[in-house]
Amino acid sequence: MALGYVGILTVRLEMPWVSNLKEKRALVRPVVERLKARYPLTVARLDGLDAHDWEVIGVATLSNDYGWVEETLRMAADYIAREGPYRVASEHTEITVLGGSEDEDDQD
Image 1 (cartoon, rainbow, N blue to C red):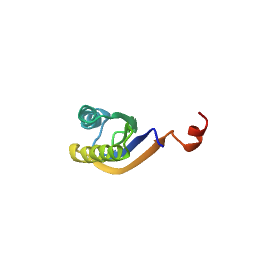
Image 2 (cartoon, rainbow, N blue to C red; image 1 turned 135 degrees about the horizontal axis):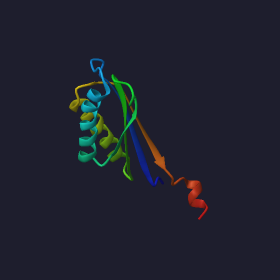
Image 3 (tube, rainbow, N blue to C red; image 1 turned 45 degrees about the vertical axis):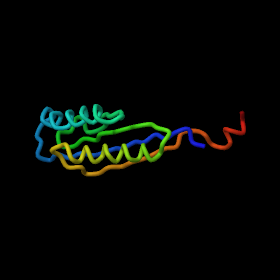
Image 4 (cartoon, helix red, strand yellow; image 1 turned 60 degrees about the horizontal axis):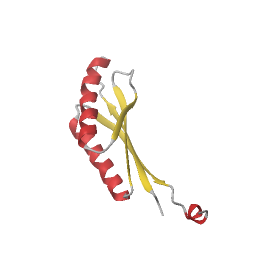
């Protein structure tokens, strides 16, 4: 039996019209902060921090309910796509099972 699930969403955002890092941060940072406030997630800017025209955002959550993890990540992806003045170039979702294999139960 699974102890829980960890869900991770990575989203690549592209803003080819942006010409400097300050402008990009002004577009991305508010969406990241509102996402953290609105949903039970950990959110981080992962890659492209020194690039002015793209960035990768990572989102993570944890629960004992697979469906809840899946739905929460879907809502986060929809929110990211809807809220910012950028283009979502790609997104990837991964949900991992935590512990609880039958072999572990036999060792008690």
